[in-house]
Length: 269
Ligand code: MN
Image (cartoon, rainbow, N blue to C red):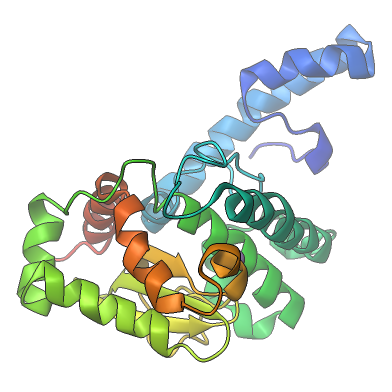
């Protein structure tokens, strides 16, 4: 088993070791950090083998990092404006992350996979549900989009969407409807259930379909944030217009990859 160091001493990428040189000013400490880097990556790959669904739902190596935005603030213009993305990522998302790391400090959750935390979310304080959800959901949302996205799904996902919803257009209609109908704040999702069937659902606040309290549980594949902070500056009260525009920035490549990985992780015959 890898020796666990306090989180602040855990560099994830080998380049981070170099950044610590000035800070600690000691080759002894650098040595320890580099040894620990190897221990952590070994630990991370062990974790992925044990939890196949982990990689299928999120791209980040270390779930407890605050992940960089995968594109610039203005990259989703004109569909999602620069100021909205900047505030949404650097203020809202960051606050969920900060509050989540504070809430898990010194608890068993610090060394748990976030997917396992969600599976038992009803046993944990509500701060974990709200901030852990907010942290995960936003990362998942950013990675659901890309600049110049919006092509249509291909391959197995495309076939599955047509089989489940009748057509891609019908799927889009139902997904938008799910986002529009969410009263107050929340999320709309495309998910895979444990039988390998696609379904659309919506969750309130910062809940998600991985949580044990979810009305219908599943592996998320695509999400859209329908909190007002996600669209209000550009679309004001017109949530429906934001949902229509969303299709122009969906990263179907990534959603298809999530589908394939999620499907494999179910080990269906
Ligand atoms: Mn949000």
